[in-house]
Image 1 (cartoon, rainbow, N blue to C red):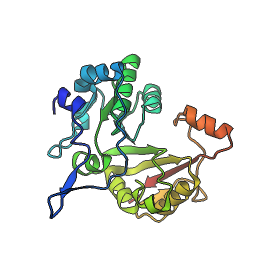
Image 2 (image 1 turned 135 degrees about the vertical axis):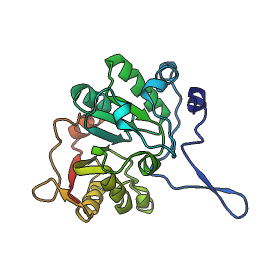
Image 3 (image 1 turned 135 degrees about the horizontal axis):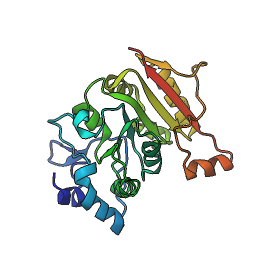
Length: 248
């Protein structure tokens, strides 16, 4: 996919199934595609930096992490990095790790590319595609040292709970992609979603809760606190972090 098609065509992000009467039925995804308008700076960053910092989705080729980065280091995958502020901060402070960020919101990808250039980072690459398909088709088993998903869409209405990304099947997909002793780190500011995450992971095959009491953990120093998180804490809202280690 060339740069122009990436910037102007989103058809690769959502797929459709053709029904018997010829109408397309949209596949359920773990996100809602909110397109938002690109700023001039974000658009220029996509045009200028995607060829060096971006990875096009290709279901026929797995990512070769050894060739992708300048140094062979542990791979940290972040799913849904938003505008990229915390991902950039982590990549900047942890030069001994390589980061792969996946986000379907193009303005967020553009903003993150701008920050990569500003901070002159060479240990971070980005993708703009559905994380499930990327994991299934482009990430080798046992290749990731850490997967982090911070503040995913909680789908707080009961009828929408099934759309939450943290589900047993997806957790097992993540387990396969993590190295042995690799870490899955989740965070949310919705208590009901935190309880759901904890229930799913405590019951998941092949994972061990890092918490000594099989509950939540304090926010690790490496996870930056976002301005929205600070605002919520000031208002008395809770934030829950979970860490699980692959043991099988």
